[in-house]
Structures are given as structure tokens and as C-alpha cells.
Image (cartoon, rainbow, N blue to C red):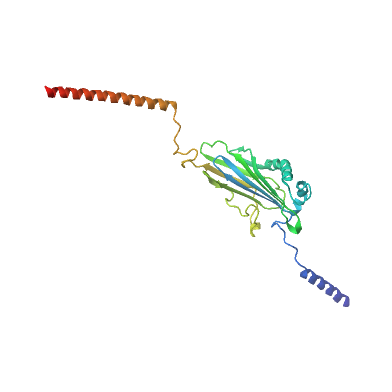
Length: 266
């Protein structure tokens, strides 16, 4: 009995020690320090599609990438180090992004790129990359409505949040979309507490058209159409005929007045 009481006391003290121990610090990312989160925002314009692509790589996976970027090990990325990393990495990212409009996969080009190495949990660095990409639209279809699809396969095998947003600018008008037009994470900078209740998404199907008829815009109905050489010739011929008719009428009026004056004198 004494031995059993001694064991009970030891177990009780151990439980009290566990309960009294401070809780471990919360992870810097809502999906954990192993997560890789990817965000895409497509903005359709009159002649192109702009893509804002954001990568938020948490501390543990970033631990294998940061030494490849930070060659001198000073805990930051110089402009030369960023350029060297982007030169070998961006092409593979673009290959995993499929943007198709009316059955044709669009050619993408990078307009700008940003890379940061912020400090996360326990002083470890994590990786944040922002790419601005554009792709020119093909000629408008017969019915005027473009049909597009988007798929991002980057880091698909890793746990993390995936978000795709489709919006428009200028004279472009969205007619249908399988995703929202407003993001929930402010480009992976703020994770709402209820984010885990939704399903991550890295694909989108959407349709749009370019609205015409607004003053000053390409294809506007109010714009003056270019005149052809035939229309210019017709205008010149009309002016000549008008001049001839004017002269004939003037002569006839003069003759009539002259005869009237002669009769009056008689």
C-alpha cells in the first residue's frame, strides 16, 4: 500500500509540473512553421491580365532556402543575392502557373519582383516573395466574351493556405467566376481566425468581356471612325455639284430679273 501511495504522489507531482509549465510560443504562421502559403490575384484589363503572386514560406521550409539566398550569411538578402536567386528560380515558378484564355495558354512576363527575409518564431527567418506578372490577351472572340482558367501548381504538395482572387480594372467586366473578387488575407499578411474553416483553393474558372461605348476608350461607339479615300472623293464631288447648282441658280435669277426690268420699262 505504501508503494502505491508513493507512485500516486509521484504521478500527481508530474501532472502538476506539466500543468504549471509555460505554454510554448505560438507559431508565426497560422498553418504552422512547416507551412508554405501561396496567393494569386488576377486583374483583368482591356488588353492584358495582371497577376500578383505572393509566397509566404514559414520558418522550417525556409531554413533550407535561406542559405541559398543569403550567400554571405549576414541574415539579409542584398540586391545581388536576390537577383542571383531570381535568375534560377522565377522560370520554374512561371512554368507551374497555367493561365489559359479561350483555349490558348498565355505567355507570361515578369514586371517586378520583391524578396524579404523577415524574422519569425524564435528568431528564425522565413521567406516572403512577391511577383508582378502580366500576359497579353488574344483577340476578342466572336461573341465578345472571354473564357479563362487559372491553375497554380507551385508547392501543391505542402501544407498551407492557397488563395486565388479574380478582379477587373478599366473597361473589363467580369461575367462569372468560381472565386471571390476580394481576398481574405491581405496578400498573406493577415490570416483571419476562421480561415481554417474554408478550403484552400489554387484554381479558378472565370469569364469576362471588354465593355465598349465609353467615351475615350478603345472600341468606343462615340469615337469618330476613320474616313476612307472613297468617302473623301464623294465629299469633294458633292461640294463641286453644290457649287455648280449655286452658279446656275444665280444665272437664272439674274435673267429673270433682267426680263422683268425690261418689261417694266416698256
